Image (cartoon, rainbow, N blue to C red; front, side):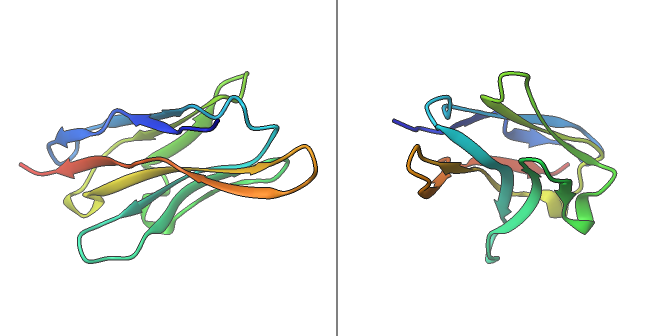
Length: 120
């Protein structure tokens, strides 16, 4: 059973920092992708940062240099450190896991989302 749980969202002033965490995917046989997406008011859901197994880490252009995605040694947690936050970073942030089953099937897993609000 995979149940992604995000934590760490909240209200922060412009220029502040937050750290998001996502757990609950230990049972995935093989994790191919760990990522964070966000969806602002009236906008579509966009990729923020992504770790591809065996590949490079990718960031959206508007967060490069401010956000850092990371995982732990056990690869059962994915974090998003967000610094120098701007009002335009306000969104619901979603954890995404791309997993592969024992028979090679690919599955998408999404968290329920955590609200990040950047406002003075």
